[in-house]
Amino acid sequence: MAESERAKMAAGEWYTCMDDELEALRGVAAGAVFEHNSLAPRQRGNIGPALQDLLGGAGEGARIEAPFHCAYGFNIFLGDGVFLNAGCIILDTASVRIGKGTLLGPNVQIYCAEHHREAAGRQAGLEVARPVEIGANAWIGGSAVILGGISIGEGAIVGAGAVVTRDVPANMTVVGNPARAVKRG
Image 1 (cartoon, rainbow, N blue to C red):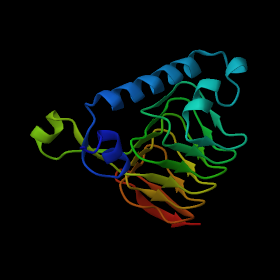
Image 2: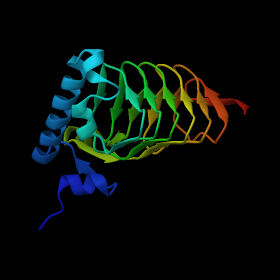
Image 3: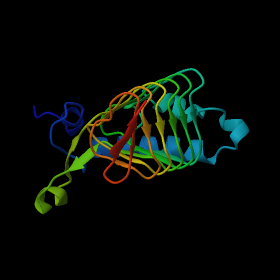
Image 4: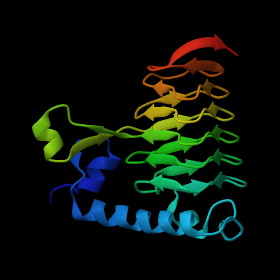
């Protein structure tokens, strides 16, 4: 029996995102995201019940402001006290782990999917999923973009609008497009 596209995605292999099972999973995520984004803040609490059921894990006191968007949800793991401000987008085709106490500003975008470099591959929906790991107590400024396969160390700062294309060591501050170091600690 051929390996499923979901299994290929989870294994970090090339897979096609135009697959019935993956489409159904994205539909489940879309419903949970819609419910979260539609609830009044008092009803939603830190993380709405639909997202609580969807996410891979959310630590104590983790909070997601609306609006929020994710591709699947089950690949997202938030540590204690993580805060995602309004407009965050996480395209979690692979694992996205955000360490305790980390703050994401408004409109931060995390993209795990890397599309095929050839037009025919893109037209066929071929992509590969790359995980993202953000250490504890990091600060990701508003509208920053983090590409798949990136690791951001504990205590690091990513400036607003930065495009992170390379790993960021612990306690490093990076800014710009592509993001470059400006100082340590």
